[in-house]
Amino acid sequence: MRLPVSQFQFPNPEQVDPQGEGIVGIGADLSPSTLLEAYCHGIFPWFSKDDPICWWSPDPRCIIYPKQFQPSKSLLRQLKKDRYTITLSHAFEQVVRACAEPRAYAQETWITEGIIAGYTDLHEAGLAHSVEVWEGTQLVGGLYGVQIGRAFFGESMFSRQTDVSKMAFCFLMKLCAASDFAWVDCQLPNDHLLSLGATTLPRRDFLQQLKTVIMQVPPNWQAFTARAFPTQYILTTDAFLDLIH
Image (cartoon, rainbow, N blue to C red; front, side):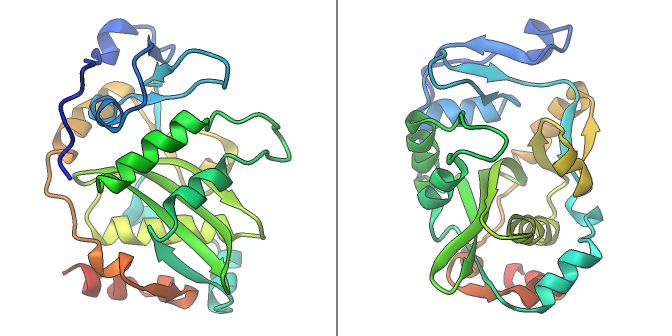
């Protein structure tokens, strides 16, 4: 689906935020056209429930290189058990709502009903995806994010059992590596992301690379959205390449 042109224009983060504090704008809306325009400029929304919509472009930017990602030995052991199945974009809104649930370390969430509606519309336009981890028919973990060209912008993940969000993350890394994505955007660094192999990139470099990757022809992931995968599938890189090419 082709989205209409956004009625809002976003600034160059380097010009409006030369000190690298991160926030680059306040206002606008959360329509899919606005979200697309923001991501194409390296900007994303992040705000509390009762605050106005705030737009961010942090410096440095947290990213991970999919082709360099290596799952931990403990995660590999979990994947070999084949206890779960993994799907791509089978339950997008359900994943976003699960990510919005209170966490042990924070009762509040920045994933408001407006965020849920905007990203769900972006998903329906083919520009956002989720990865789901299932135990039988129960959704136990997953993540979601925005995909433009050959760039993936991770938004949030959740886990209801040990290591299942890491399984979703591993699936995403394998998928993006097979699709020749230069990096996956993780926005802001934290201990969990750094433990998974994330690193940081100066915002200027990130924005320069962004111009190229979003203009590349997006991969065809239809073969992945059409089926479910046992966790052992993640262990074989060639299997991802076979479904993409």
